[in-house]
Image (cartoon, rainbow, N blue to C red; front, side, top):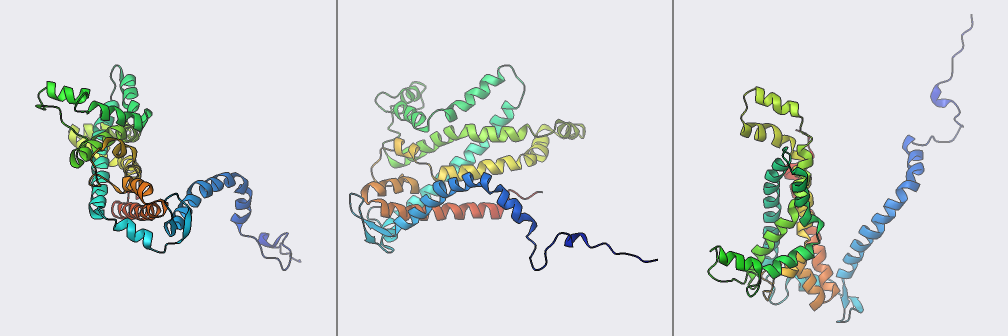
Length: 313
């Protein structure tokens, strides 16, 4: 009895001499029309401005912004060694600004989120009230603090005197250190809605039966929070921290509005970039922007490498 052997499935329909395409190639081509708008958006809004910023940092401009050829590394030298600017203090201010605003916002938000996650009458209104500083413009919120802290007519200054904290109205925004500290308080205030709601969303993902099991095992309220709830909040806290680092690092309007002190002692890199653009032109400002970008990327890389927020534990 004769037997026949069926051809292998992989060779069916294949033409001799033509290489078979990779399985993912056709799917990538098919998805390209849907990916194209996002790719164009990334190219036009992210990559092109970033590339032009790097290009500008090596160009020389006159006082009215007309390009005058290559500047080599002169813009970088001027950005890091401009007379009157203590660039070391500016970077120290930047790190203090980012660390304090981020850490304080996260810690306060842990308490706020825990409170907002409980059942009580009027919870929706309280949650809505927490969103208000986020919904309002940062410029408007900062302006309210600026006028409220005015030593001549500010209602916040007057209130601090009336309750005995101050003996007389104080110029919080008139000198560098008090203005810088005041700006950090305002930055925490406007950041709380984002961090609180991010952590609150993580809290609502914690299963009730896990908490009840810990309770039945005799865990105290503190042990349930630190040993059960807090580890499960790790992804939400990691995302909130990462976004806060990037956002606070590049924050401009709060310091720009609040600080009335002359000089550069209350500056961070972002406010100094703004001043360089006005005084020295776009070339030097772009050079400091490139340095600032590299510093931000380094901080994020260290954060991801040390804490590994995306690693499952």
